[in-house]
Length: 172
Image 1 (cartoon, rainbow, N blue to C red):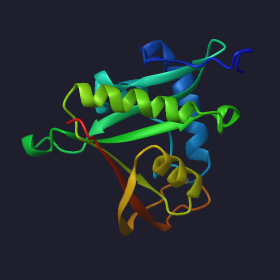
Image 2 (cartoon, rainbow, N blue to C red):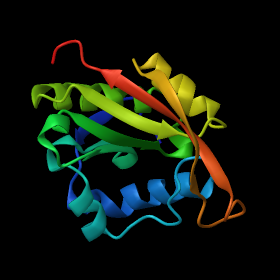
Image 3 (cartoon, rainbow, N blue to C red):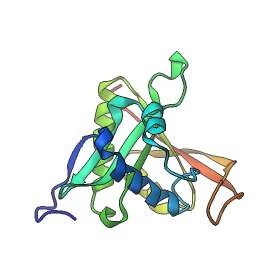
């Protein structure tokens, strides 16, 4: 999937990327450890719920191998600088630094627009994601106990905890 140089291009996400982005999203959902979502949304729902200036894809050998995007956590003006992010990497590209490149692009983009906090909720069982986020400047700030139930898959109906992680900008 990577070319001989291992080159990965990070660029803004476009509507044309959606089929590959959605496939990677679905792959993550199917693990049961990435999200409470039961299925990837349609483009219109995704597009309407993510901030347009902060969506990126990682491309290797002409294929999308990862993506990141953010949503506002509140419409209240006091929280204008706080967003929640998602980052997904195709199984075939994990462990190659793709996620870190995506988070670096996301951090630069959000800081340029005055965003001071990127947060994420991660299942405590997803130790790989927790370690990855911590290696990229996120800290665990709390645990939300039985915050929601799984709606599909083998864990349907099961209450789950999440850890709240955040990355605070040193520039904004």
